Image (tube, rainbow, N blue to C red):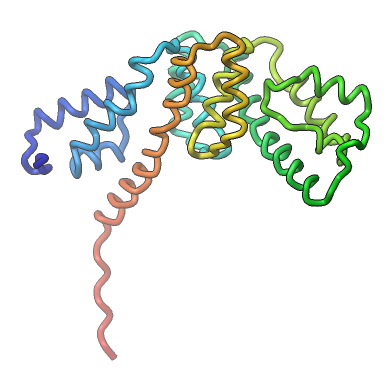
Length: 257
């Protein structure tokens, strides 16, 4: 049977806290609440969440860039985590261009689902697949290739203006320098594979692109693993609410009429 909180000595709690900070690089009110209520959670979560960054082949720079992408993604929007990882990213040599290249990829992520949904719409309404796409627009789509997991044929047939605007954003919306193509693929794998916005088709396509760019399977697996423990942010919310409710006085019972 695991030890209950009242069985854990203060030095042991201090050791667990130190382990957590060493693995995760932060300590917040929710972790203190969890330490007092369930120290085993804090210790084991530190090992579990820290494992990919500690053992995988990606550089600390790449790990922090992926964390920046995941925490800033519109499917997550976790500001305190983003502040932690953006600060760490700058400390390990990430440039401003690197960060804004990642934020550009975060913005483009939403267009992937537009293309997928447009394909479904085109199928249901019977849009003629032989309908011509302007040669210049088709050339731009062909030039983009699979590097953003975007399906643009249906969009280009039904609304070529939207396709042009999206391609302009992809071509001209990122900083002049930043990540390498393989690094951009790693970030996109992490974004599409994360449970907060899991997109199997996009994940499969980006994995294929990354492998063709020479990214190792172990690097791709690490990029996938880094998204898993974001689920603890739900635990953090629950712990903070518990602490607030637990501190609040119980309202007096209303007298019966």
